Length: 417
Ligand code: MN
Image (cartoon, protein in one colour):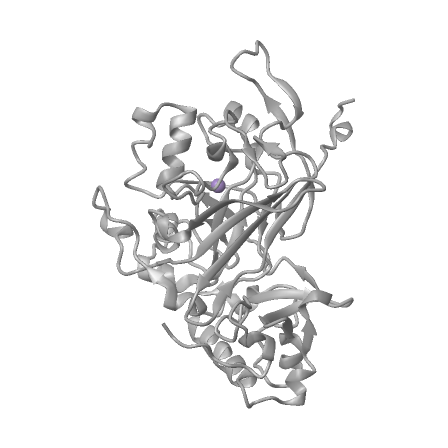
């Protein structure tokens, strides 16, 4: 485990600060003006557009409101920029030009860090797949027959991927309970979260090309926290035979910072033991998961935040590199800005489950928040926040919060009362 790299930005040296010089996550910010690219350092953002204009960084499109130009350039450029930024910010190297490009993190607005080309969501958490299979079907046949052989997924919506802090209205949809004669249309009553990590594709692939697991790993620029908000009642009615559709199309929230693969390198770990050997095109070639502590907290209106889940990214059965290699294995073109959701990350025990569906076992066992309020699913005004933290030796690597508050349904827009 490498040591903390000390910075002249003093707040970056505090052991609990999520943005030490070892991290340097990339995002897009504005300070009452045009959005441009940045890295986080301590309690500050560093304006990369300004550094580029000053000739302190090469032109990788850092003056644009998205990281896509930089993300497309690949690992040599990513590593070169990381090295230059590390040198500029290292203890003893303070210059006025770089100091002038710092802004207080608390005073800026964070934007979606990259233009999301397409969004694919996987289902790589074994405990989650078992839990959901048990709830929706039966425990004896909980895992679908393909599950141990391919990372299964569905094509989601890029259009409604939003940055942390974007509040949205409870979705409307069609649903039909098991006792209902006819389906009905109305506000979702079983609104849920899914705790996930998102892998961000930097280097694209051509239509018709396949990629190995190692090549796939090289294509990945970094990782974000991802909340795959889910409408369980809409999902239960619509999901067969083509999978989730409107149940997950209304919002997906990601953290404001993309943590690079370089920053996470010390935390690499292997996938769990295989029950069935994988076919060669998606077989593990090295440790490509990460040891990242994850948590979910819930805050009811006028309530106090309660941590309702603690788990770790290292529990997943498939890495993002395996998912990406599988995704391209048919010749599917992968694009700069593609976002790959990991699948819900649920550890093996209650308290480690990454969705309310699992925590409350289908809504049967309410959870109690620290302020005494109880919940089965999300109510209007509730705030859900994901956090991620890779614990180093004397420092930690954070993503910034991935949070959202649910507003009441906008039923009138859809012809309701
Ligand atoms: Mn999901």
